[in-house]
Length: 449
Image (cartoon, rainbow, N blue to C red; front, side):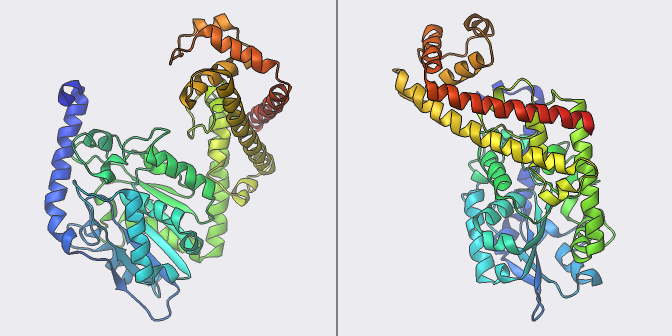
């Protein structure tokens, strides 16, 4: 029945994916079972370690080994740039029928890096491929001490917002690793990690690279998914998803990209130049939003009020600025201070809106007979529309979003009851004044930049 419901294009993609994953599973199963995490190089007294984290269906050797036999971790030992730096290849169980979830793999990573004293280095650099980037992020979210020691992380084709291929394969694989990588929705695991990563406000930079060539006719991870949560250089690599981490020599694009990031962290002058480049990049991104104010959300909305806003410009600008720290934003010539002030104001609005919605939902629950929160959210949506100035009839004309036996008359009754509540009126006025303020600031930003 599942096959019948698929579109022709999805059937083709699924067949190609099964071929690719089947080959990968066959070609790596014996290696993966034998492969253990290990140091590729270890100097006495070294203060920096580079940790390689492979992806789904991979292991600590084959993932990083090109067709000519070059092994990326070993290539680093042949480049003087990385002299004095220890190198470690982390391995974990993965496969088409893997039982451990991404979050559980992060726990394995913690135990492994702790046991092998990797997490005690003064400076840690992560080089992650595909799902390995998700494992790395989950690990750093759980281990703030290791995060504080992290110099930077480089993510090669990591499906930050998911992969359409995983969305198809989830129907035929029991692997929790694959299931969790499906295209992201607001309620999914990837969305939780996305929100937690932004909230953590890590100081270390995240570099990203994305594949430009298809793997057996399929782009496994799109540029959009690979670029999400990236805060530094976003590098296109002219190869496929598998070969993006298999440099044949020290002149290969993946190797050069990592070397550039490493050099950047080592030489302050270059870092200053890069920060200025980042500031110009932010300015360019904000200017683009101003030219297309009605484009899609940059990040998932965190409140219903934000999701229902007609003018999305302020939300989209904030979604962009969330990726950058204060020095990067304020470094924008001529408008940095204004942009950072907007970021602070929008954060205050978002916090107030979240609290307002929580309180309002509770009040609605006290006024209606239905006893679960999903239904109260329907009333909340109606109330927001009425507060926006719409009439009962105009809301009805837009289409029926009611459920659980809720009627338009009862939704209107709840709105009128709330309108007679002084505390509701007072808090609503504050939230909508804050919304007006950030909307006006966003409009000013768009006109200036």
